Image 1 (spheres, rainbow, N blue to C red):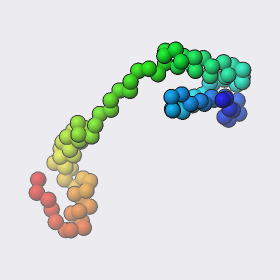
Image 2 (tube, rainbow, N blue to C red):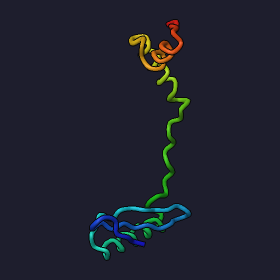
Image 3 (cartoon, rainbow, N blue to C red):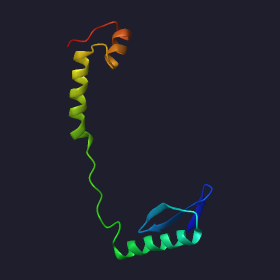
Length: 97
C-alpha cells in the first residue's frame, strides 16, 4: 500500500512475516512508488534483503563498570559534582573519598 506523506513524498507499507515494513520512496510519482514497493517485496521474497540477524547490543553489565569508573574519577576531581552535591546540601554531611 502506498500513501502520500507531506506535499509530494510517497511512502509504502506492508507486512512481511509478521513485521510491519514502512519506508519512504523519496518520490513524487505514485507509479514509481508502486514499483519501488514491488521491488522491495520481491527482494524480500528472494531472500536478498533482511535475511541477516541483528547485531547484539552491548548490555548494561558490560557498560556499567566504565560509567562507574568515570563517575568515581569525576567525583575525585570535582567533589561537588552530581548527587553528592545535592545530598550534602540536604543532609548537611560530607561523604568520605
